[in-house]
Image 1 (cartoon, rainbow, N blue to C red):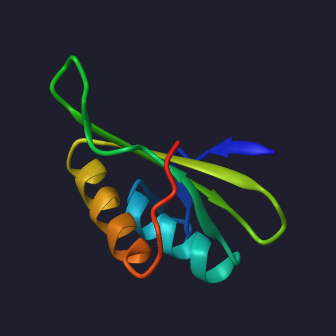
Image 2 (cartoon, one colour):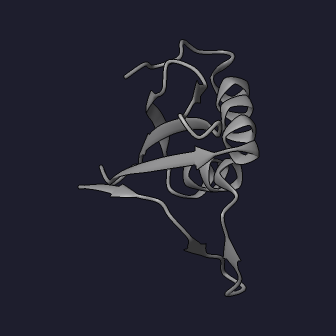
Length: 91
């Protein structure tokens, strides 16, 4: 199953669009691992930065995390940090 993360509801019930926080949450709490990511940051035709990461959870569920603008930069940096000791998976 492949799902795309849009807006999630935190345990407190507040909405969040913070992709880098979601990435960490999926890895920590759902035994996730990064299984694919963009080859790098992309600039869309409208000038926004874009980055994408796929996480596969321990139960096999695949979740895509797209990010735009400043959030894309933060997700890219967090992904690099998490993968620093390992080899980055590319799609």
